Length: 144
Image 1 (cartoon, rainbow, N blue to C red):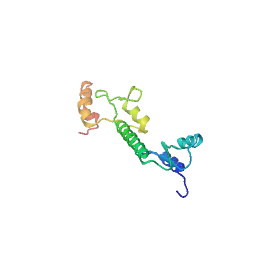
Image 2: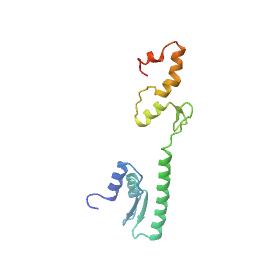
Image 3: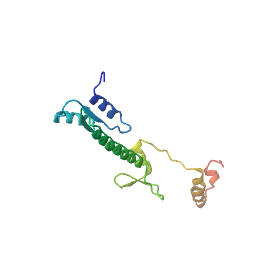
Image 4: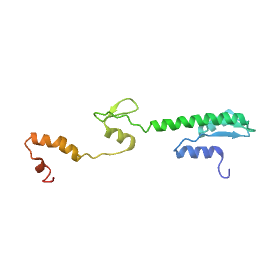
């Protein structure tokens, strides 16, 4: 490959992130302990030497397919957020239940502003205001 070798390409793709790419290093050189360490540090997953045996390559690709499938399953499971149906707290990776605002702030940098939707205003706040002897329409500033 002009301008970049296989290890450089592997490092570049690993740094980019995104979906997992499975790398099999195929080399005409004998793989030494030092070369193997450098390849592992660059993100290589497996090694083969030339000439490549078709059956061995097939087995390695089968393993790669299995690993990529499991990686996709993990990614899908990470999209599920365990949330309490009552208090709406979210369980984090350490099995600790935390407020939804804290969870999203830590995981996505999301900030919240709080208000009351019209349904909750009618169901929750109007009875509380009436109990306190406050006219809900007056509390809203005459809005209806």
